[in-house]
Each structure stands twice: as structure tokens, then as C-alpha cells.
Image 1 (cartoon, rainbow, N blue to C red):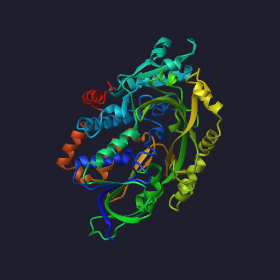
Image 2: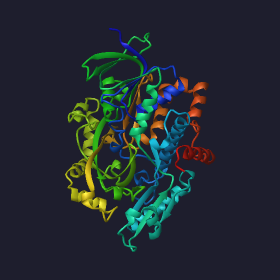
Image 3: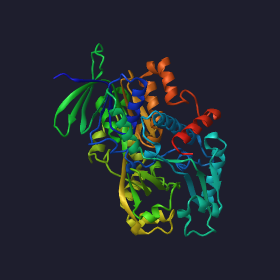
Image 4: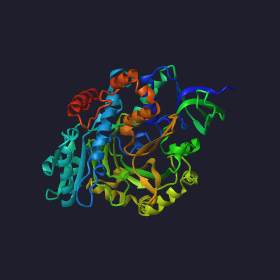
Length: 497
């Protein structure tokens, strides 16, 4: 039987694959694009709203993006980079809304102010210093700071209820923050792609093998073995370019591909849980995202926040996430995922990272065994009047943090995302997690620049990129006037103003 043929194979039906698929289609509608998803529908793993720990990462309120050094100085570079990257996402989504490729913005994004909230003299001093540094930059010019009790009551009435006016409290506030339902956004993007003649979606389909074609005379450079879990049929697809955007499943797939650039990479799985409010009267009293400071030893994805979200069009209120430990790489994965990922090429890195992060592992295991009373105690720091009966526990998503070789320590654990590409640009994989989805457009533009470099340097693609993302090729961090024009358009188009 003749193998299937495609120009682009997207493995994984999440926000990254969907974004890359839409970008490529917009740049060259003649490309044949195939998406493979092992679950019955797209956006059921990391991109699902309840599985996504940060639905609107913009650096406004996430204090872990502005770490404080031992000498008291605060680094803001990462917050600036994440905010600028999120602005790139907003531009692309605005174009898709304006051209009808995406529906009305409220179907996937909603205005939701972003707050950082701390208590105690030391934390308040940190937040005030952070505010002073960020406020000087145009990206954060609209940020407000207050320690005034009555102002804090206006910004977050539910959080301030039952508090005493003598408490030392402080908060920053950005009104044009947003909440993004990345599950809905992914489904809308894929729905758009499905209306195009050159796109195919293969659900319930698992990638069994990835093999590079050695005969360079053949255009299609990868044989990808597929298995349909419903029909029990196997088939092979020839792909000129393969993108592994399968969340926690990307690392095992990258290892199957066997490219030299994958050697030494390992993964450290981190799970999570939410407390979810089941009282509609409480939910309607809170309409912001309020982030606090992470506990000592907690991973960055565990920064506690009281989070207003729109999930499938309905308001929800979540608190967490509470971290946990499992050996699964995907929420619907196998307990053997971690063991199977250990290879001769990454054994040293895995051992080193395990040794150097024993305290983190201990912290995650302890989190798993917390009682409802203990989790409510953490919630009470945000909502002193919260009733245990109004909240129930639900599993959040699964993340696999990056482990890399490190000469001094054998291996190091990294929090963030990283793109790994083959030397010839025929395969790319996205590893890691936070800030993930919010910076998906910037990340996928990075894939295009590395794997479609010839086209991305051509006039036609450059001009088209500037239509899709008007700031393309320029820095929103350095150019205040450009940022002003871009932000005015996106806030109006996406109804965030």
C-alpha cells in the first residue's frame, strides 16, 4: 500500500500545533498539513482550560518572572520578554478575528484584570520595588500600585472581605489583563483549518515510529508510522517537515526520532491540582486574577493564584495549583513514562538533576498527601472567609520540565520552554512548560525561522508575516511608539480595552 504524503505533519492537537498550522497555512495555503492526535479530540491535554496553569501569562502578576537576588535586586528582563511575546500572540489573534478565521473574541479571550497580592512588610517592600522597576517601561506603564485598604477593596472585594484594616497588604493592578481559554482557542483554530482543502486531522492516532529517510533524492524526509487506536489499523505517512508539539509526549517522540540534537535531554514530570469553587454566589463576586508568592521550594508553575476564568463560556473560580508528583508524562499517559524516557544519552543528566533537586521532589510528594483542610488553609490566605463546602479538588494538567546536561552538576532542571530542531530543519520539537501557551505565537515563529529559514527570508513571507503580526522583525521592548500602536489595535479588536 502506498504511503500517505504530506508537507507538514503536526504531532499533537494542542495550542502549539494549532498555531503553527494556522501560521503555515496563512503563509502558504498550498501546503498540505496533517495533524495527528492520539485522543478523540484536540485540546484535551495541556491546552485544556482546567489543565493549563496560566491562562493569560503576560508577566503582569506572576512574581516568579521577577526573581529577587540575595542582594535585594530584582531582575525584570524575563517579565519584559514574556509580556512582549504575549503581545505578539494578541496581534496574531487580532488578525484572525478581523479576517474571520477566529470567531468573536469573547469565545476565547476575556478582559480580566491582573493583580499581584502580598502581605507583610518584607513582601510589600519587594512588590513596591518590583512595581517601580516595571512601571518605568512602556510595556508596564499602565500598572498601578497601592497599599491603601479602600483601594484594594475596589480592586478585589472578595479577597478583602473579612480582613482587618491594620494588616500590611499591597497589590499591583493592570486593568487590561486577560483570561484566555486555550482549549477553546485551539478548537477554533483547528475548526478553521478543517475548512481548508489541504488540511487533515487524524484523531485517535498514535505515532509508533519516526524514521529519517536516508535517500536524499526523495523530497519527503521522514517516514512516520501511525496506529489508529479505534480501527486498529497501522499506516505510514511521509512528511517533509515534522513538528512534535505533544506537550509531555514530545520528549519520547523526540527520542524516537533519534536526531543528534536530542541527545542528553530528559524530563521531570510535575502534576497539579485545583480547588474549584462550586458556589455560584461566590464565583460572581470575583472577576480578576490574583497572584501571590510561591512557597519556598515550590516550582514556578505552583505560584498560588485565585483565578477567574471563562471555561467553555461559563465563569469559574479556581485556586492553586497545588503541585504533585507522578511518573506520567501526560495526564492520560502511563506510569512507566519516566522510566521509559531514561536512555544512555541522558542517564547522567537525569541522575544529576535528581540528586540536585531532591528537595523539590520531596516537596512535590508532600503536596500529594495534603488534606482538604491543609489546602483550605492555603486558600484562606487569599480568602479568609472561604468555606470548605464551597470548594472541591480536581486534577490539573501534567507538565514535563526540561532536564539538560550540565558539566558541573551532571544535569540541571530548567523551567521554561525550549525548541529543539534537527540540523536540516526537517524536524522540530517543543519541550518544557510555562509560560507555554501564552507565548505560543512567538514560539512557533521561532520554529518557522529555524526550519523554514529560506522562505522566512523571502519578500513574500516577510510581507505576509507583517500582516499577521505587525511588529514582526521589530522589538516591542525597545520601541515604545510601535508598542502603543500595536496595543491600541489589539485591545480594541479583542475587546480588552
